Image (tube, rainbow, N blue to C red; front, side, top):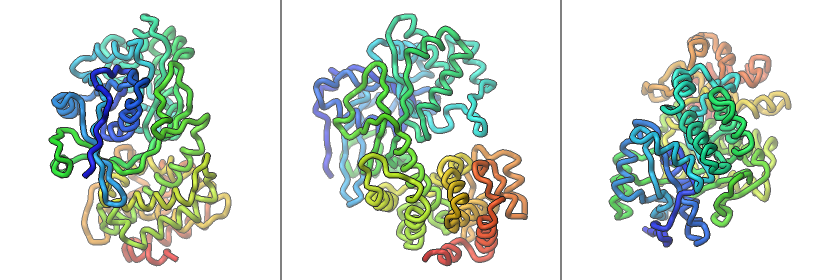
Length: 478
């Protein structure tokens, strides 16, 4: 196995970036690009100070500190050949539970020009129906009243910015790296609403001194189990307490709106643009939507790993037909992107045995995923009179997954739906399958008023219950 070590002097790096949420994806994606850019001598001021805010981060913090913050990243090739990178761009690590003052002081440091975030899609505390920031949340209320003793990311960032303003440390960019459409706009809505409610003078300062560019991120990065740690270390020969592994594909597209400067990430493959919308649309409509499309049917057919599901030619044809017939007419290719090559690469990525993602991870939180990945294009498809076969089958599969919780092999399973509310549960429990079409996740498309969709969906719902998912999928593959 090829091991690639960094060649810069880690002792000379200073932190120009504060990153909140030092999870696996961040360490496989943003750290990967930053580690590469630090090889350029004029970029040594762009090291990353990681910030962890949760009690559950303790193990990660102690593991990384025990090895001077270095760690190994195994990039798993679709050709079966892996490469191991030694990552040294994490030059500081603060655990907010242990030292909350250090978090705010670091954000206020004039050498820090960028605050990046991976706090998960649900971490922005926005109401799923209105999109408004939830000010009456108990922890938010605590932070609004206790500026010097924050507990949430919003409280910590606000306190850091307040100290930054007092010290005249200059402007800063807040860059979301979470998998959200227009994630910069989302971050801006969340942080500015909180700050406006807490400190109107600071809110005015933020208005002129903080930018929130949108970005699009992409790299499949599975969770790391204790067995994975042993396996990765055995293959790499490195005794790493906190290794990470990921696929060999990576993409990062960012709107170039950095008020205080930025690394020259473009030297290492990052793409800068004036508007990230077309890139987001392509990824969400093809990668994320296809993940959702294959997840529930695959799980109901008994598959538990994505690469295993992609060995089933029926599933491959199902996904590729969705990409070609349903989505390609609706998705213009951004920039110089070759859409046919992009789709081909997606199929290869899903089938990568070395990454072997969990199907259950793709199934998790469908209530949040359908409104973002499926419903916007489905609404257009219905209005345009397009073929609704695959989306109706997906919807019927999702109902069966939620309602019966048993796969084609008779195996019972637990579902992962943290945002499922009582009204949604009543719709799932209803024996009339059409009631399910009023699920909160489907509000962006009037599914019940499409006679063709209802006809296909009810047919599939009945067939899946009587015959199983696999036979029904086989019947719609052409």
